[in-house]
Image (tube, rainbow, N blue to C red; front, side, top):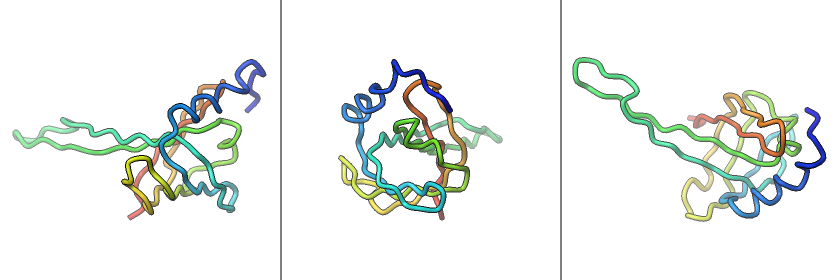
Length: 113
């Protein structure tokens, strides 16, 4: 994806300020080390069947859009380092992505079980 030049340095600023993990991202079959923003969101009330609720956890990984342009669905992300020392060694599979068309790309993940 072509990105406007005005946004070229914004991704680095976002990642340096908000980045909380170092990860090995598979891009075109090769592991690439990247710093990014891992988000874990707990969702409640996904489903209510006869008074029994269902909860779920979703993950996303955001980094520079240009760094993630080659990532495809079913590629993997392995967490190498984390600011809170959680999720280290966890492997995620890319389920999809959201591209803001400017500086960042957010990968939608699910745990590789």
